[in-house]
Image (cartoon, rainbow, N blue to C red):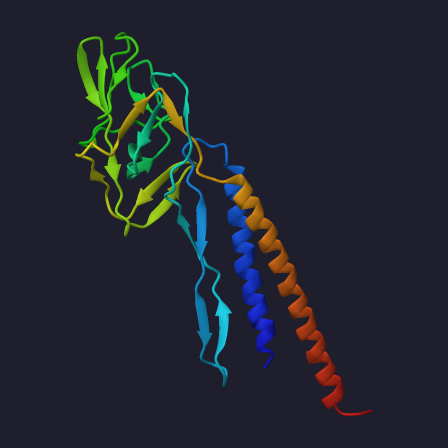
Length: 241
């Protein structure tokens, strides 16, 4: 059995997935609040062969929780999070979490994400501003004030480390475990007039891409050599004519 052939093939499958992930990260390096995808690989031990043969799994994606760079915009509806919390918005089928705080207000006063979803407060209710109340002031704890009136508060949520995150749109994620409302604002809070960018490091991603491409080519060479060895064995051991 040409174990090396199948091992190299499994490596190519894994690296193809890694290349696709890197390409998607690079394509979104300028997307506000985007969280990069990472791939975790596992070793698969074959039980069919007489000797232990280790194969690479195709890997599974997970969403990186690293924070992205924060830039000053001076837009009163742009907000960035200090700490590791998340905003929430009302997505199809339930709450979706995001680090993209580039909000806007429609003619009815609804506070919306860039994609038009309603931003939620700590109780999970949509936030409505006074469309005639002027530019809002947003406090460190998310409290929204227009003039002398408090009109709402942006909710902040912590996502547990053991929760599984799945991507929603460009910069949103769904969590397998509902987010927990932030109550301690000593180390977590909101900065008005700032916006968080993508957490993709383009230089690192390009370095990864080069390394993966080289490994892919190396695996292809291994497959060719295995096929050549196999064909030589067939010619050597086959019946003479």
